[in-house]
Length: 423
Image 1 (cartoon, rainbow, N blue to C red):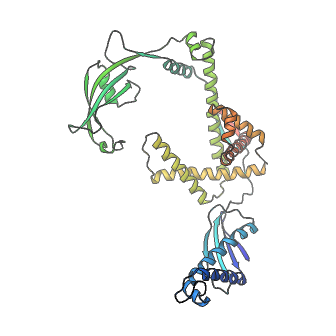
Image 2: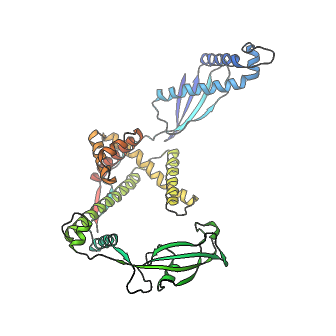
Image 3: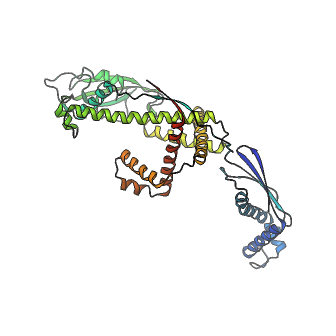
């Protein structure tokens, strides 16, 4: 077998493979014999038809099958001999197979670009200083107060106001005709934006037993297809009004929130938690900058198929996330263009980081994996044993190792970067 390799671009190679005539002859004879044993030819018993008759009837199919088998058998061998790692499915351009002649074909596929060096020292990134504002602590305290609040009917009875929980029954009419949805019940808190603005405004100031007619216009992208772009009237009846009673912000409240001796202890815990979240966000922002700057400093070519695979995966993830959130997101050319640009950065960064790992001999050992299990356990609230059991799956374990390796490379990049802190 003769093999020659031509580099068509930094990321595309073409193999020209020639299989010797004697190999072709042997494979054709084997194929003819196999077809002869099973072919049903009029005038001959099974397996007794002459070779010439079999070739007349099945020759083109036999040649095509032999050509495919020769490609399958020889291409992997040729790739191994040339020490090439294909990144895409080979595009095969075979020549016509002639039984007593050498068989030639071309195989074109994408490969990793040759990277002579990677410039990663001195990447310029900005890091925001971490400062926990009093307002953030106060907001968290208010959230906790709401969690520990109670709802009760106001005494004396009064109209609904912002912050109240209001239970209503309603039915919808479109052009004076009752909608198929019929009568329904909801409970909503006025002022938190969880229901239509027009309905919130109508319920504000209404008392128990009051009715309100609210006209609304449904947007063209409304989830209910039969309501898109139409105008309807909600007929509301207030059934119940409750006000939220917040606990006092004192030491007793702190004890109710957990194992805190006093309010100061609770506040310190909140500050610590907010700092942890802020550090994680800071780390993610720095990592994003490092990836972008690394790609800018090393504008290596990237295999198109890898970019398309990454873009498709990202687009699919975005569409699924939108559906889960009940949002409308269409697979438009603009969306594809945006995800493709991001995909190109991800692929380029992946190739560069793999090269850095090779240059700097960065590896993931058992200690790193054990540490990763611990971090996952902390993030998910599971015990380490359960996390380890989940990551016995080889694919999950590979993903964990890849994440740990990426974090180690990013740490190297950050330590070698020019980091500017800003407020």
